[in-house]
Amino acid sequence: MCAMWKYLKENITGSWSLVVGMWITLRHLLIRPVTVNYPYETLRMTERFRGHVELIRNNENGMPNCVVCMACQKACPSNCIQIEGQKPEGAPRRIPTLFMLDFTTCSLCGLCVESCKFNALRYSREYNLASLRKEDYQIDLLERVGKEPFS
Image (cartoon, rainbow, N blue to C red):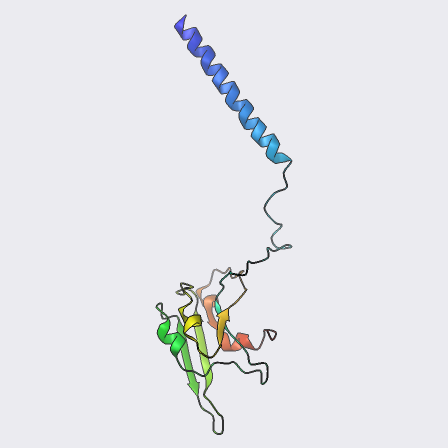
């Protein structure tokens, strides 16, 4: 008699579990999904999103605001920024000739942006950086500064 009650109790418990699971499934079947149709739709990034750093152009002359003071390179704990510059004859300041970012080692700590006193760096809004090649994450920021609209 005891084995029969145990068998009956297991059947009732299992049936109840099935009913609860089906109820959850039916309830969520009618709710709009959270996902988006990715290649055709994208999500709006929040204001506090941190992409890789990028150079800011001067609206007057179109050149980057960077004066090659090396503060961002020195402040970077990951050593992912490499800068070289020169001072052309007659120019009021130095201009960068190389500004490379190794995004594979960047920790997005923001120390480079905070250390820049010349408003030359900011976080990009770019988030879709998927690639299988390491070379795609060696970013030449001087090359990219000319392709972006003024902000």
